[in-house]
Length: 373
Ligand SMILES: [Zn+2]
Image 1: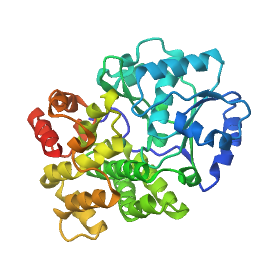
Image 2 (image 1 turned 90 degrees about the vertical axis):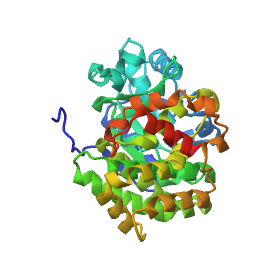
Image 3 (image 1 turned 180 degrees about the vertical axis):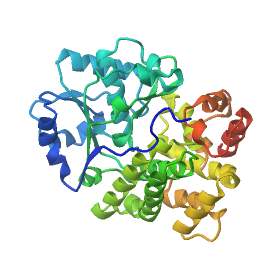
């Protein structure tokens, strides 16, 4: 039985090359006079902050890949210290997710775990959350459009914080901001976007509108990711940014085992494993595992990607990763068998497991990790 609507579309999206210039009027619309800019040092180093056109910006730039509870506490501290009145999340998925966690901590005093999806924490997030304006500088996470944030707690667990109140009030998608993305990051973030399209499409939750969006995003990303990675012109950057957006617009269907498998690995903070790279490795294995439980969806993907039969979808993604120069095995990333040992249980408990088309047991996760290793 549904406890909340499964179909809804209401986010303001500004999608155009150069659209970052609209930020001023978006801030004015929401009466935000002193936003906290949540970003990372890479964005600052590239001199991209000036593109926001904000004089004397208040910055939190301590976000790293796979954001942590400590970073969220720090960012909320900078917000309070400077009496900010809104947040601009500027960067890849990590700064945008971190901005959402910091937003929760600004006016909620409990530890972050209290608000995690696993503890039914979304309902504990009240309306007293600063507005977030999201401006992605990568094309992949879809976090600019999502109501979820992934964060590693101080005890090492990676959890999802999910609430409608964390949905950015507006998202400004300017493909020009992604022109300087290095090719490996383009490939990895692009594979994250593609994995969102695939997993949302295959999720059994009813939402044919999201199905249409994710299938279109899949075709678009599949067509342009190689050119975006190796050539990186504005046309292909824009197509990949749209693919990322389409993945994000489909999140309401829920993801699946690819994300359940990659979240616990992302929580190994010392390893700094890239979420999109992990998804790229897991995707073919999960597609093979799921194939007989979502054959109609597999057939639809086969047709859209102009393949011969459903078994080729997994092969096509394996081939794509090779073309992109991404690793195909977890051991290529320095992950050891011992590190994988405790992760199956965490994957089983991940919030994405519930919407995988094929139900999983803990041994299934063990096997999938072993296959991907
Ligand atoms: Zn993802």
